[in-house]
Every structure is written in structure tokens, then in C-alpha cells.
Image (cartoon, rainbow, N blue to C red; front, side):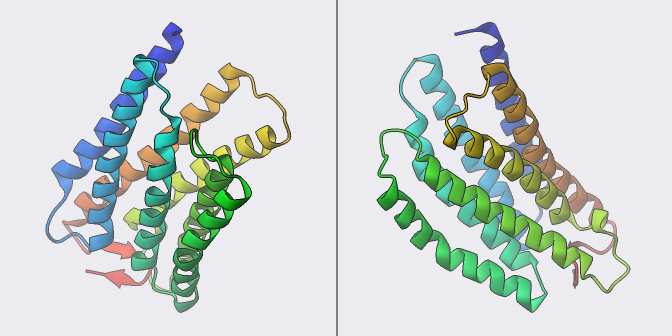
Length: 225
């Protein structure tokens, strides 16, 4: 195991732990359900990634674990944006995504029945659905008729992180589907940028919610608590 890979493992462990601890330290009863679910998702991510990291260190095949976690993660993200969105068309889109998710997963495993390692076709489904959900929330923010700037909407930061993460890993998956080998160093760089953007967006969401306690808590373009 190369020293660079170990450094990346430690870095991501710090990122996951920082994200979860930030959410736990700042969460309040007054937070809307979707933001509390984001804290729970951060905890589940930390648990799964620690198990995967331990398996990597012990040289145990572990990527199949993501077959169980990534659909849960995708469902959490879509549901969070469903709860936070207010525009009727955006809410209907998220409901449609939630309904299509299990059907799309079944089709992905039927077309590409891989269970002993991560199912890349199913992974593309999750990335595409998360991308649509993030874009839908950003559109919801643009449709905002109030004077609330996007930066004061906590889940806006999560959407930006999810958008960057989904775009990067969709490109990686598309390139690998065409049998083009991405250099390991380049893959690690993309992974670094994508994962950092995602969890930095989570952390920024938690911090924005905490600061908003001094004024109106805005979780969606039209919602003020």
C-alpha cells in the first residue's frame, strides 16, 4: 500500500469525521427534518467508510459494501430535497425520482448482475438521480420570489457539493465504460475534489443553519422558520 494512498485514507477519514461531528455539535431541535436527516446521513457515511477503510488496510475485498449503502445515500439525498423544495413541479420531480429509484436499481442489476463488487451501472443511476435532485433544488432557488439570497439557504451549499461530486464521478464512470483507463494519480485527484466538495457542502449547510438561528432559518427558497 503506497504512502500516498494511506494519506488519502487518513484525509478522507478526517473529512467524514469532521462532517459528522459538525452536524452533531450544531444540530438543534428547531432544525427541519431534512437537515436532521443530513446529520444522520453523515453518520451513516462515516460508519460505512470506516468499515471500508479497515477492510482496505486488512486487504479484504470491500467494494461490494457500497452496493448496500449507495442506494440508501441516494434515497436520503432525494428525500431531503423533496422535503426542502416548495415549487410544485420540483416536488413532483423528486417524488418521481424516489418512485423510479427502486425500479432503476432493479433494471441495473438485471442488465449487469454484479454483486461481488460495486455495480457500476447502478452507480451511474445513483449519480444521475442525485444530479437531477441537486439541479432541481438549485432551480427552486432561482425561482425564489423573496429577497433571500441563495447563500442563506443552507441546502443550497449541499446542492452545490452534490452537483460537483455527481458530475466528476459521472465523467469517471463514462470514461471507464469506454474502456479508457484513467491514470491512478488522476483518479485520486478527481476523487479528492469530488468528495471534498460533497462533504464541504454538508459542513457549510450545518454552519449556515447554525448562523441562521440568530435570524430567520431558511431551508428552501420559500420556507422561513
